[in-house]
Image 1 (tube, rainbow over the protein chains, first blue to last red):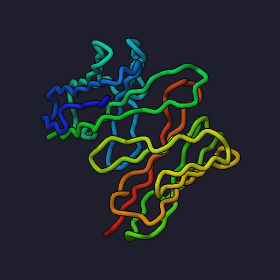
Image 2: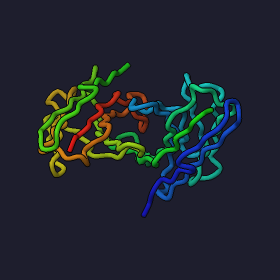
Image 3: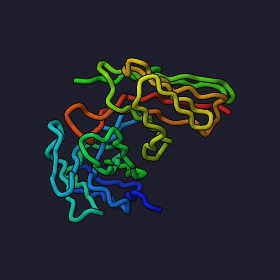
Image 4: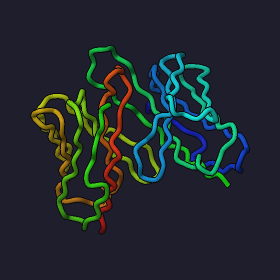
Amino acid sequence: DAMVIQNPRYQVTQFGKPVTLSCSQTLNHNVMYWYQQKSSQAPKLLFHYYDKDFNNEADTPDNFQSRRPNTSFCFLDIRSPGLGDAAMYLCATSRHTGPTSPYNEQFFGPGTRLTVL
Amino acid sequence: TQLLEQSPQFLSIQEGENLTVYCNSSSVFSSLQWYRQEPGEGPVLLVTVVTGGEVKKLKRLTFQFGDARKDSSLHITAAQPGDTGLYLCADRLADSNYQLIWGAGTKLIIKP
């Protein structure tokens, strides 16, 4: 089945210790997103890729970086995690079908829950 | 800047009861999506509504889109514990072809 996979599902790291979260997709979608979600709140967009073009949200801290080496894979790097970075990190994909298409469904992975000690 | 407001923020009811949750926008929706996020999982799309006055049904879930396309409701009939989750509404961001703007969600708990 086509899907979005995130690894690991749970990640524990120490304060200040770099961590990388991974996402892969078999949907062949051209857009990939990274969201941060805290405790039953709306997902907050960190950045997204349209093909290889990287788009950073204005309020995403510099501590967060991302790489997309190919269509299928995307990584989220947190260079120096702080206690406030503990959250669920969601990867999502969508297929951009054109400027007039009303449908922009996003397909989410199960998320990685990050704990910072 | 468009704002999506969802209400109530939290709802806890007994199995078998009916409920309605709402999503209102400060401006006309482009194409409204409803997602459900079960605990510990990512959101999953339930439905997309585009046309004012549109009604869509998904088993016990009924989605209504206001005539003016600024409000939407989700009605669940005979709620079951499996309906527990965070219900999120989202709309396409005004200056983007594919980004979404999200409501804060309604956290729904169905007690057995």
